[in-house]
Length: 322
Image (tube, rainbow, N blue to C red):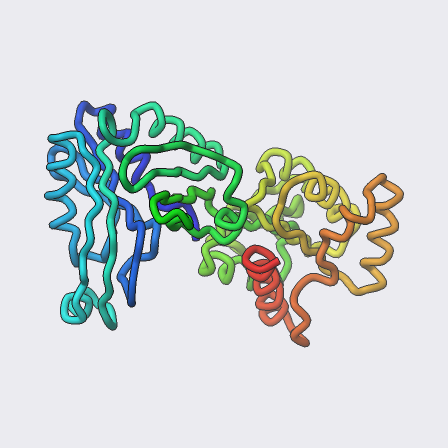
């Protein structure tokens, strides 16, 4: 759902501290495997570990294999069967089988410069894919060619059966303009769904930490705030003020961005007027069609909480299906 883990950053930190590091990544699963494809852990040359590939079932064995990989500089492709009994012991309903690729950083494994580049891309919120041949013959960082994987946030093995693609997407963000009652319901729901919420409202009575204790709150005009935030392809933008003085400048920023979702509160008549204003401002029909207005899936929602459910459902539908 979000970036694979903090494993690349931890690996780089250990290397900067003078240690070796190996990355272990789940590349295949069968049955009810404990962790999804792409889950990672990192092991230092001192035996420390961060992250998880199995929820605790096989981590000990992977650490030993990683230490061996660090010693001889050779990647390893491991396969483990997690029994129902072992799965139950770590709180899972049933077991499965996983394949784990262990790569030392440095000679024979992931080049150190490639790891640095990966960490840089992640820090800059640029989606990037790490391609690696399971036999160790090829590695590359790419930002094109895996559009479906990027959209679905889905790592996996390509059709050739030998190339694993690890998708490193920035965390999802939700920027809500207007700290109204709908926003108070939407923000915690979105956080549960994996979004980092930001509330923008120049009106401090609406946009306050007391009203939104679990979100970053910015008390500034929406266009200024959005320029500062930086709206990218992993951002959803929801405008709830019902005030053109606030919504329209935010829309101008949003429509020029790569935001995957733009939704605006208002009736059909209000939205028609909004579209006219945007056309007069120079936006073409294709750009204006990106706006979901009235906002949310049509489920007959009534009241702030139900409207928030409809909005979140439409955000996820746009991200995963559209």
